[in-house]
Amino acid sequence: MELIILRHGKTAANLEGRYNGRTDDPLCEEGAAEARAAKAYPDIGVVYVSPLLRARQTAEICFPNAEQIVIDDLREMDFGDFEGRTAEEMQEDPAYRTWVAGNCTGVCPNGESIPIFAARAAKAFGRVVDDAARRGLKRAGVAVHGGVIMAVMDAFAHENVPYFDWYVLNCGGFRVELDEANWAKQPGFTSYERFGEAGDSQAMLEGTNGK
Image (cartoon, rainbow, N blue to C red):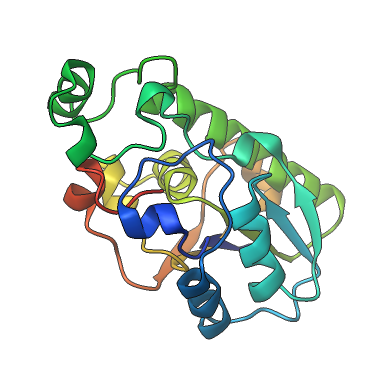
């Protein structure tokens, strides 16, 4: 099975460097334009999507003939009290400074931590694979968020690389292949290929790329 895992186009929050996870903002004009400029997959008949608007709008553009199947737990990480704010706005926030000092892996106050979020996203991706296999799909799309892509690749690529090295820019992502017959015994990708440019993970940590 081949899956095209695509990050959504830019939103206004991305341009402003805001930590927008659960916030349901749409594509901005630039984001819609970059989605239209990205490779389209008119031959793909099913795309699994986050429930958030920016992912669904990107799927409409890049998978124009696909049925959208919403998987709720493919939504982005919940940044809790940091949601909707920029790193600059939180420079003097002790909770934010502690979180950044911990490499952004701890629990966001009233939100998620990376381990909690990553486990949720990986489990949701497993449901994607199971559903695609039940449908007999050999090729499908997945339109999601930067954090979800990092979580999925970290869980299933089986590479000894840092979590944040899987970060991709808007409308970037991965083409992955897997053996659905062996997935239940040993979930993992048999191969993968990055498309679009890799993002700057340090800038992402500092909140300059948003979600």
